[in-house]
Amino acid sequence: MNEDAMPDFRYHPDPRLTGSVEVSDTSCVVCGAARGLIYVGPVYAVEEYVEEICPWCIADGTAAAKLDAEFTDVGWGVPDGVQAFGEQPWFLRRPHT
Ligand SMILES: [Zn+2]
Image (cartoon, rainbow, N blue to C red):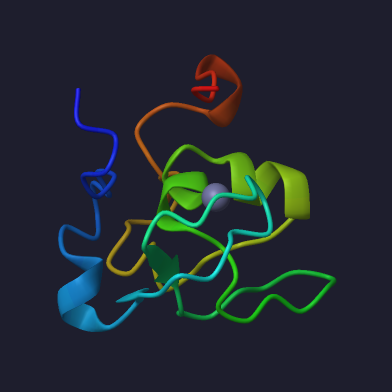
């Protein structure tokens, strides 16, 4: 398994192409890792998070759960009622440590 591959956004197949994810060595505010890519799209949360969340944390739902945030850009084109990030609820996945 290639952990450095982009996570799979079912409804946003190529976030880099649309400019939602950029190459960056910023550390993710959720997992603390600098994995080379950072989400730069809109974040709707109580706190402000600007370019400090990695796409992996968004894809597996960790960012949404931890920060109580929504990422509408990642969910672009998502039909109503469908969870935008990943295919499984975040609590069914366990982050790799
Ligand atoms: Zn992260």
